[in-house]
Length: 173
Image 1: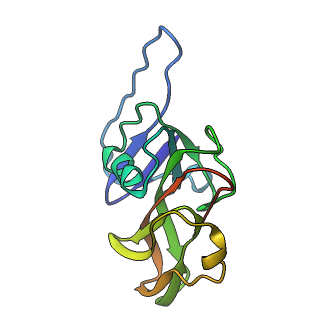
Image 2: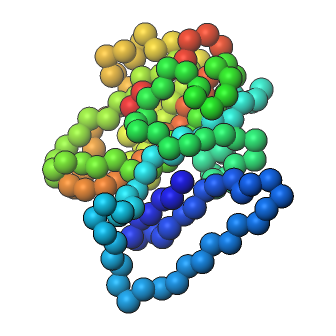
């Protein structure tokens, strides 16, 4: 998996073949150029970790430890939304999404979370949706747990934290 942000840098996440070394060579260029079909774009990464400490605080600690994965599993995803854990058990786990969303135009946007158990979303570091505690999705199914934020056109960094204890799972932004 390769991630690129012109203001931040380039990141590589991979698992080398057992018993083998991997070397990555990087050299500066006079200017950044790529063929349009090869251009790297900011992506969205989901990390999950099972364990007995499933809580919103534990999910935020997972995000703070990034990119150290430990016993976490993850991969690229297309959107912040899951009805199960694609990388492990479906009960007693934490989730951390990090990536980018693209505002199509300068303006006000309403961002909400719908989750089974607690969730929290930040855009460009600002908390925009927060629904902590143990609960089902039902009380938030109409998007009550969110707020409006002004976004300029273009990419914005998003982080989303969620935890699941037992029963049905859901995390939607």
